[in-house]
Image (cartoon, rainbow, N blue to C red; front, side):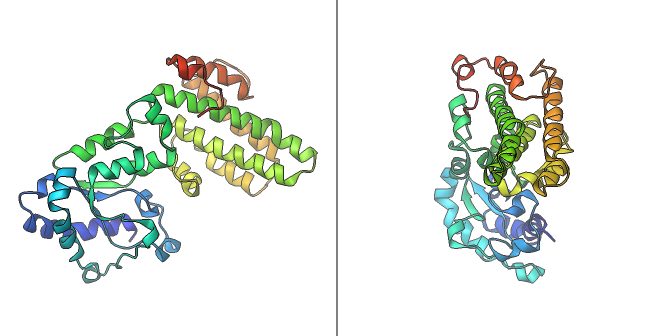
Length: 305
Protein backbone atom coordinates (compact mmCIF):
# COMPACT_ATOMS: atom_id res chain seq x y z
CA UNK A 1 0.00 0.00 0.00
CA UNK A 2 1.48 3.36 -1.01
CA UNK A 3 1.20 6.62 0.90
CA UNK A 4 -1.92 7.86 -0.89
CA UNK A 5 -3.72 4.56 -0.34
CA UNK A 6 -2.79 4.64 3.35
CA UNK A 7 -4.04 8.21 3.68
CA UNK A 8 -7.40 7.31 2.17
CA UNK A 9 -7.65 4.17 4.28
CA UNK A 10 -6.95 6.06 7.53
CA UNK A 11 -9.50 8.72 6.63
CA UNK A 12 -12.24 6.36 5.51
CA UNK A 13 -11.74 3.78 8.28
CA UNK A 14 -11.21 6.15 11.21
CA UNK A 15 -10.92 9.82 10.35
CA UNK A 16 -14.29 10.47 8.75
CA UNK A 17 -16.30 9.09 11.67
CA UNK A 18 -14.09 10.68 14.33
CA UNK A 19 -14.16 14.13 12.74
CA UNK A 20 -17.86 14.16 11.85
CA UNK A 21 -18.79 13.00 15.36
CA UNK A 22 -16.56 15.53 17.12
CA UNK A 23 -17.40 18.47 14.82
CA UNK A 24 -20.86 18.02 13.30
CA UNK A 25 -21.19 21.77 12.70
CA UNK A 26 -17.75 22.01 11.04
CA UNK A 27 -17.33 18.76 9.14
CA UNK A 28 -18.99 20.02 5.95
CA UNK A 29 -16.55 22.93 5.84
CA UNK A 30 -13.48 20.68 5.98
CA UNK A 31 -11.47 19.83 2.88
CA UNK A 32 -9.72 16.50 3.36
CA UNK A 33 -7.12 14.71 1.28
CA UNK A 34 -3.39 14.41 0.79
CA UNK A 35 -1.37 16.97 -1.18
CA UNK A 36 1.78 19.04 -0.86
CA UNK A 37 5.36 18.03 -0.18
CA UNK A 38 6.49 14.40 -0.25
CA UNK A 39 6.84 11.67 -2.84
CA UNK A 40 3.57 10.08 -1.70
CA UNK A 41 1.68 13.21 -2.82
CA UNK A 42 2.92 12.62 -6.38
CA UNK A 43 2.39 8.86 -6.19
CA UNK A 44 6.14 8.30 -6.49
CA UNK A 45 6.88 6.82 -3.06
CA UNK A 46 8.67 3.48 -2.86
CA UNK A 47 10.63 1.44 -0.31
CA UNK A 48 13.39 4.05 -0.21
CA UNK A 49 10.82 6.69 0.78
CA UNK A 50 10.08 4.96 4.09
CA UNK A 51 13.06 6.43 5.94
CA UNK A 52 11.62 9.93 6.42
CA UNK A 53 8.37 11.92 6.34
CA UNK A 54 6.33 8.86 5.42
CA UNK A 55 3.52 6.82 6.89
CA UNK A 56 -0.25 6.98 7.27
CA UNK A 57 -1.59 10.52 7.43
CA UNK A 58 -3.88 12.97 5.66
CA UNK A 59 -4.56 16.70 5.51
CA UNK A 60 -7.53 18.58 6.95
CA UNK A 61 -7.72 22.05 5.42
CA UNK A 62 -9.81 24.67 7.22
CA UNK A 63 -10.53 28.24 6.21
CA UNK A 64 -8.56 30.81 8.17
CA UNK A 65 -11.50 31.70 10.42
CA UNK A 66 -12.29 28.06 11.15
CA UNK A 67 -8.63 27.24 11.70
CA UNK A 68 -8.24 29.96 14.33
CA UNK A 69 -11.42 28.80 16.08
CA UNK A 70 -11.19 25.03 15.78
CA UNK A 71 -7.66 24.18 14.61
CA UNK A 72 -6.23 23.00 17.91
CA UNK A 73 -9.26 20.84 18.72
CA UNK A 74 -9.31 19.31 15.22
CA UNK A 75 -5.60 18.49 15.54
CA UNK A 76 -6.26 16.73 18.85
CA UNK A 77 -8.88 14.50 17.22
CA UNK A 78 -6.52 13.81 14.33
CA UNK A 79 -3.74 12.89 16.78
CA UNK A 80 -6.07 10.41 18.47
CA UNK A 81 -6.37 8.28 15.32
CA UNK A 82 -4.58 4.92 15.48
CA UNK A 83 -3.06 3.84 12.15
CA UNK A 84 -1.51 0.75 13.76
CA UNK A 85 -5.01 -0.60 14.49
CA UNK A 86 -5.50 -0.74 10.72
CA UNK A 87 -2.11 -2.34 10.17
CA UNK A 88 -0.69 0.93 8.85
CA UNK A 89 2.70 2.40 9.80
CA UNK A 90 2.76 5.47 12.03
CA UNK A 91 3.96 8.54 10.21
CA UNK A 92 7.54 9.67 10.84
CA UNK A 93 8.00 13.40 10.28
CA UNK A 94 11.35 15.11 10.41
CA UNK A 95 11.40 18.43 12.26
CA UNK A 96 13.00 20.15 9.27
CA UNK A 97 10.11 19.15 7.00
CA UNK A 98 7.54 21.22 8.87
CA UNK A 99 3.91 20.23 9.24
CA UNK A 100 2.71 18.30 6.19
CA UNK A 101 -0.38 16.48 7.48
CA UNK A 102 -3.04 17.04 10.13
CA UNK A 103 -5.02 20.24 10.56
CA UNK A 104 -3.83 23.00 8.23
CA UNK A 105 -4.97 26.53 7.40
CA UNK A 106 -6.15 26.57 3.79
CA UNK A 107 -5.02 30.12 3.03
CA UNK A 108 -1.62 29.62 4.64
CA UNK A 109 -1.14 26.35 2.77
CA UNK A 110 -1.75 27.94 -0.64
CA UNK A 111 0.35 30.97 0.30
CA UNK A 112 3.27 28.70 1.19
CA UNK A 113 3.39 27.20 -2.31
CA UNK A 114 2.02 29.94 -4.56
CA UNK A 115 2.69 33.25 -2.81
CA UNK A 116 -1.03 34.01 -2.58
CA UNK A 117 -3.87 32.78 -0.39
CA UNK A 118 -5.78 31.78 -3.53
CA UNK A 119 -2.81 31.29 -5.82
CA UNK A 120 -1.22 33.69 -8.31
CA UNK A 121 -3.32 35.95 -10.55
CA UNK A 122 -1.13 38.56 -12.22
CA UNK A 123 1.56 37.82 -14.80
CA UNK A 124 4.19 38.96 -12.31
CA UNK A 125 2.83 36.65 -9.61
CA UNK A 126 2.81 33.65 -11.93
CA UNK A 127 6.39 34.31 -13.02
CA UNK A 128 7.61 34.64 -9.44
CA UNK A 129 6.45 31.21 -8.29
CA UNK A 130 8.87 28.32 -8.99
CA UNK A 131 7.35 25.62 -11.19
CA UNK A 132 8.01 22.95 -8.57
CA UNK A 133 6.02 24.92 -5.98
CA UNK A 134 3.01 25.06 -8.31
CA UNK A 135 3.33 21.32 -8.97
CA UNK A 136 3.29 20.78 -5.21
CA UNK A 137 0.14 22.89 -4.82
CA UNK A 138 -1.89 20.76 -7.25
CA UNK A 139 -0.59 17.23 -6.66
CA UNK A 140 -2.21 14.48 -4.61
CA UNK A 141 -5.92 13.88 -4.13
CA UNK A 142 -8.85 15.56 -2.40
CA UNK A 143 -11.05 12.97 -0.69
CA UNK A 144 -13.80 15.30 0.47
CA UNK A 145 -14.58 19.00 0.09
CA UNK A 146 -18.27 19.83 0.59
CA UNK A 147 -17.54 23.56 0.90
CA UNK A 148 -15.61 23.46 -2.38
CA UNK A 149 -13.30 26.37 -1.67
CA UNK A 150 -10.06 24.40 -1.57
CA UNK A 151 -11.03 22.52 -4.73
CA UNK A 152 -12.01 25.68 -6.60
CA UNK A 153 -8.53 27.16 -6.10
CA UNK A 154 -6.98 23.84 -7.05
CA UNK A 155 -9.02 23.58 -10.26
CA UNK A 156 -7.98 27.07 -11.36
CA UNK A 157 -4.32 26.27 -10.79
CA UNK A 158 -4.65 22.96 -12.64
CA UNK A 159 -5.54 24.89 -15.79
CA UNK A 160 -1.85 25.77 -15.93
CA UNK A 161 0.03 28.93 -16.70
CA UNK A 162 -1.64 31.86 -18.45
CA UNK A 163 -0.71 31.59 -22.11
CA UNK A 164 1.64 34.58 -22.09
CA UNK A 165 3.63 33.12 -19.19
CA UNK A 166 3.69 29.65 -20.73
CA UNK A 167 4.95 31.02 -24.03
CA UNK A 168 7.66 33.08 -22.35
CA UNK A 169 8.86 30.04 -20.46
CA UNK A 170 8.75 27.88 -23.59
CA UNK A 171 10.89 30.41 -25.48
CA UNK A 172 13.43 30.38 -22.64
CA UNK A 173 13.50 26.57 -22.55
CA UNK A 174 13.92 26.31 -26.32
CA UNK A 175 16.81 28.79 -26.17
CA UNK A 176 18.58 26.82 -23.44
CA UNK A 177 18.06 23.53 -25.29
CA UNK A 178 19.63 25.03 -28.40
CA UNK A 179 22.49 26.71 -26.55
CA UNK A 180 23.39 23.89 -24.16
CA UNK A 181 22.55 20.79 -26.20
CA UNK A 182 22.73 21.63 -29.89
CA UNK A 183 25.59 24.15 -29.72
CA UNK A 184 27.75 23.98 -26.59
CA UNK A 185 27.70 20.25 -25.82
CA UNK A 186 29.52 19.19 -29.02
CA UNK A 187 31.95 22.10 -28.69
CA UNK A 188 32.81 21.08 -25.12
CA UNK A 189 33.44 17.52 -26.26
CA UNK A 190 35.73 18.68 -29.06
CA UNK A 191 37.70 20.63 -26.48
CA UNK A 192 37.82 17.49 -24.30
CA UNK A 193 36.31 19.52 -21.45
CA UNK A 194 34.34 16.74 -19.82
CA UNK A 195 33.11 18.83 -16.88
CA UNK A 196 31.69 21.54 -19.15
CA UNK A 197 30.17 18.85 -21.37
CA UNK A 198 28.40 17.28 -18.37
CA UNK A 199 27.11 20.68 -17.29
CA UNK A 200 25.84 21.34 -20.83
CA UNK A 201 24.01 18.01 -21.01
CA UNK A 202 22.49 18.63 -17.57
CA UNK A 203 21.24 22.07 -18.63
CA UNK A 204 19.83 20.58 -21.81
CA UNK A 205 18.01 17.75 -20.04
CA UNK A 206 16.47 20.03 -17.43
CA UNK A 207 15.27 22.48 -20.10
CA UNK A 208 13.92 19.65 -22.26
CA UNK A 209 11.93 18.21 -19.36
CA UNK A 210 10.54 21.59 -18.38
CA UNK A 211 9.56 22.24 -22.00
CA UNK A 212 7.73 18.91 -22.10
CA UNK A 213 5.71 19.80 -19.01
CA UNK A 214 4.90 23.22 -20.47
CA UNK A 215 3.79 21.70 -23.77
CA UNK A 216 1.54 19.36 -21.78
CA UNK A 217 0.25 22.34 -19.77
CA UNK A 218 1.54 20.81 -16.57
CA UNK A 219 3.87 22.12 -13.86
CA UNK A 220 7.29 20.49 -13.60
CA UNK A 221 7.90 18.98 -10.14
CA UNK A 222 11.03 19.14 -7.98
CA UNK A 223 14.10 18.13 -10.01
CA UNK A 224 14.29 14.73 -8.31
CA UNK A 225 10.90 13.81 -9.79
CA UNK A 226 11.03 15.59 -13.16
CA UNK A 227 12.10 12.54 -15.11
CA UNK A 228 9.83 10.17 -13.19
CA UNK A 229 6.84 12.39 -13.93
CA UNK A 230 7.41 12.32 -17.70
CA UNK A 231 5.71 8.92 -17.77
CA UNK A 232 2.40 10.65 -16.98
CA UNK A 233 2.60 13.05 -19.94
CA UNK A 234 0.79 12.34 -23.21
CA UNK A 235 2.77 14.80 -25.36
CA UNK A 236 6.39 13.82 -26.16
CA UNK A 237 6.08 10.41 -24.45
CA UNK A 238 9.37 9.23 -25.99
CA UNK A 239 11.36 11.87 -24.10
CA UNK A 240 11.69 9.74 -20.95
CA UNK A 241 13.62 6.97 -22.71
CA UNK A 242 15.66 9.44 -24.72
CA UNK A 243 16.82 11.23 -21.58
CA UNK A 244 17.62 7.95 -19.86
CA UNK A 245 19.86 7.11 -22.83
CA UNK A 246 21.58 10.50 -22.59
CA UNK A 247 22.13 10.14 -18.85
CA UNK A 248 23.78 6.77 -19.40
CA UNK A 249 25.90 8.21 -22.24
CA UNK A 250 24.60 5.49 -24.55
CA UNK A 251 24.95 5.55 -28.33
CA UNK A 252 25.30 8.73 -30.36
CA UNK A 253 24.47 11.39 -27.76
CA UNK A 254 24.39 14.24 -30.27
CA UNK A 255 21.94 12.28 -32.41
CA UNK A 256 19.71 11.77 -29.38
CA UNK A 257 19.85 15.48 -28.57
CA UNK A 258 18.90 16.29 -32.15
CA UNK A 259 16.01 13.82 -32.10
CA UNK A 260 14.67 15.44 -28.92
CA UNK A 261 14.89 18.86 -30.55
CA UNK A 262 13.21 17.60 -33.73
CA UNK A 263 10.30 16.27 -31.68
CA UNK A 264 10.07 19.46 -29.62
CA UNK A 265 10.08 21.62 -32.76
CA UNK A 266 7.34 19.47 -34.28
CA UNK A 267 5.19 19.92 -31.20
CA UNK A 268 5.74 23.69 -31.24
CA UNK A 269 4.46 23.70 -34.81
CA UNK A 270 1.53 21.43 -33.93
CA UNK A 271 0.45 23.82 -31.18
CA UNK A 272 0.68 26.76 -33.59
CA UNK A 273 3.56 28.39 -31.72
CA UNK A 274 6.13 28.26 -34.53
CA UNK A 275 6.21 28.18 -38.31
CA UNK A 276 9.93 27.41 -38.52
CA UNK A 277 10.73 24.19 -40.37
CA UNK A 278 14.18 23.43 -38.97
CA UNK A 279 15.17 21.69 -35.75
CA UNK A 280 17.58 24.29 -34.31
CA UNK A 281 15.38 25.47 -31.47
CA UNK A 282 16.83 28.97 -31.18
CA UNK A 283 15.23 29.71 -34.56
CA UNK A 284 11.80 28.97 -33.06
CA UNK A 285 12.10 31.38 -30.14
CA UNK A 286 11.10 34.49 -32.07
CA UNK A 287 7.91 32.83 -33.30
CA UNK A 288 7.04 31.70 -29.77
CA UNK A 289 7.66 35.19 -28.38
CA UNK A 290 5.46 36.75 -31.07
CA UNK A 291 2.42 35.06 -29.51
CA UNK A 292 2.91 36.96 -26.23
CA UNK A 293 0.37 39.77 -25.94
CA UNK A 294 1.89 41.57 -22.93
CA UNK A 295 4.30 44.12 -24.48
CA UNK A 296 6.65 44.18 -21.49
CA UNK A 297 6.88 40.40 -21.40
CA UNK A 298 7.29 40.18 -25.17
CA UNK A 299 10.24 42.61 -25.03
CA UNK A 300 12.05 40.70 -22.23
CA UNK A 301 15.31 38.87 -22.94
CA UNK A 302 14.60 35.56 -24.60
CA UNK A 303 16.21 33.56 -21.79
CA UNK A 304 14.55 35.51 -19.01
CA UNK A 305 12.04 33.48 -17.02
